[in-house]
Image (cartoon, rainbow, N blue to C red):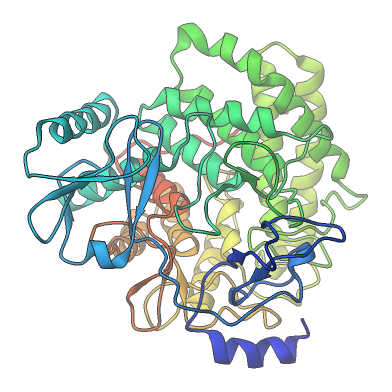
Length: 491
């Protein structure tokens, strides 16, 4: 979409910042391609461009209400719509909802539809006890009761969004009920650092099962692992995020079993790292690729380069753990080339979005900081200048200020929380704490973390969002006194 037209469109539709939601046309199921009828989508999200065959199939936004909460059991989940959430509260540390009437609503074990029961129902009480036991079996980070309560809610939401097969739903509304490798990798790391080893490893196993033969991943997959839901472009950054998540898991996993389990993941790591290394050009940088904005760029972008650097260093270190010196050396050399390319091309621009300097600041600058990468000496200045450039009147951040992809007045909680994690990792806890306080202040009435915050400072879009929850949990862990580990650069 031309930039001038996109600006005009954004001014009209900025109040409808949600992902594209497919509906059936002429009886055609969503996702068909070729000569069949194609789906119609609701209004395109602010800042997003074409996603394959979705181009040109946008209809006016109708009355849509993304979920604001989540009911879950061990095998199923159900979103809580705004009408149900009005006046409701979760029973503390659980997925059981106390309704305005005083009755309880929850998703019984083995069921796929919720039930409304009398307060203190014994079966609901069993589910509450199970949720609390799961939290107690791990670590709930936070230095205050409010932070710990937020961490508990985020962990429960992430657990509820995790499917038995390891697929990690981004959220539980239409358009979010898919597993993104990037979001899932953050969730795996968060589970790992809070002592929930089984959940962290389950996500990595799903990543291994859904890796493409060429070592890459689709942008997102259906939750049953059967493949992508549409023709959205695949994204190279997953080749960094997944090995990084595997490294974070390995650092926390029980020592007696972690070697054998890493061996099971190693074919995935090898294919991912080899593809990442092979993607680097003569300048040491990866090719143009869609970044976490899910928008294609014409030159290399920091949202891909930084995760690949983290992933190559992580893969090299894991290869060393399994006594694979050839792999370790090969990926270390690639990481060195990539690091040098980033220093030559991105650093002089303050780690802006693209190496051509035409696409402004990007919150992905935070990916150059721990726990992803050892921060270059000039990164603190770039973090400060980028934060100032992206700060909105609401107090949150827009993902970037690329003039060709305006995001409107909506702050995005993942992009804002990136800076809490980056400043926590670079020894600036006061800055990190202020950002984290803002993100936590935008939880909705159920205590869930939303994807966006509108121009009035109110939670917007879907909640809970697994990615934001993961970043918040990791930030709280990092601020608890023990820095999160960062993959080392091997000689």
